[in-house]
Image (tube, rainbow, N blue to C red):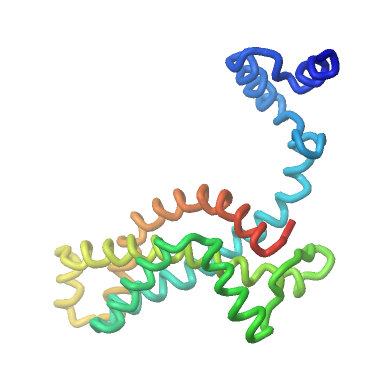
Length: 220
C-alpha cells in the first residue's frame, strides 16, 4: 500500500479529478503536457520526436487530396457527362464512408504485396534521404489523401452547381466565352470559397487521422 500511494502521488492521480485537470491545463500554458504513463518520458519530448514525420505526411496527403478533388470537380463542370458525374459521386461516397485504415490495408495489399511498387512500412527522415522519404511517405499519404479528396470534391461540386446559375455566369456565357474559360476564370474562383472552409476543418481531422495511418504503415 505504501508503494502504491507513492506511485499515485508521483503520477498526480491521488488528487481529485478537477485538481488533476487544472494541473494539466496549467502545464499546457507552460509548455508541459505531463509525462507518458507508458514510457515515462515527457509528452512534449515524445511529440517533438515524431511531429516532423506527421507534418510531412499531412502536407503530402493534403496536396494529393487537392490534386484529386480540384481537377476532378473542374473537369466535371466543363465536361458534363453522366458517367463521369456518377464516378465522382461514387468516389466521394466511398471515400467518405471508408475508414482510412481500411483504405491503407487495401493499398498495402495491392501496391506493396502484389505489385511491389512502394514500401509498406518504415520511415526515412527527409533530411537524411529526401527521395526515400517521399517513397516511404507516398502510400500512407495517398491513403489520407483519399479521405481529404472525397469531402472536398463533394463540397466543391455542389458549390460549382450552385454558383453555375448565377447571373454573372450567364453573362460570361452570353459574351461567347468557351465553357472551360467560364469555369476556370469565373466559376471556380467563387466556388472555391466554401471548399476552402471545408479544407480548414479537414486539416484538424487530418492530423488525428495521421496517427492511425502511421500505425498501419509502421511509421513509428
